[in-house]
Length: 113
Length: 117
Image (cartoon, rainbow over all chains, first blue to last red; front, side):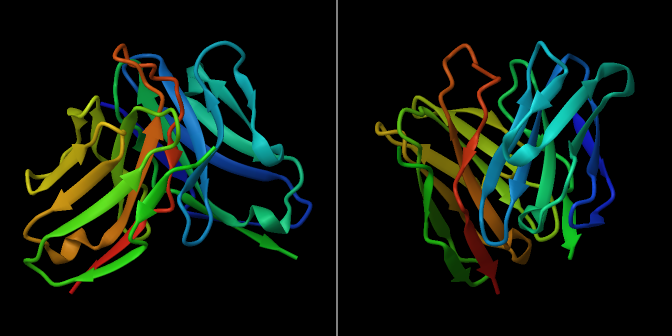
């Protein structure tokens, strides 16, 4: 069965600092991996995805993530945090042939001025 | 292009009542999925519809049911509401094919916040 673990329910960084949000997954087959962002009172917006090919994936708003099969990880990074990055971030996995996305519990990112 | 739209945005119901939530999929998308997001949790998969038939279901009881219409819009129906059904219900659409197209990302609506008292 698939599962996703996001380490740290709350991460706080200063504006301009590195953002690192951690995600580990378990899957019996090669997974497809996603990061979504959720702003207050809104739905989920896709930041980036990994399906096949290059393991370093670039997304919107300056975010990127690296798929590391040996570590079963898909951590999300951004070199320099901006106040507008404050939101809830969800890592998700989907196995090939499966319909559903399995989400982690989410990480709330706070940016300090 | 028009994104995924959901209605209503907020809803308050009493325990034991029934509720219907509506979703219009993004233009060109033929598959609709529903997710339940309890407060402080990640979304959980309820079910998916493709070509007006349910083709995947999560761990939700039968009182959660759905429909998909020929224009790909969808409804989520919940009978005999319980207090724990209070959550944000998210609809997502994708341009999947019968074979799966499983790397197609989901496009989410802003959700319907249901409160059961």
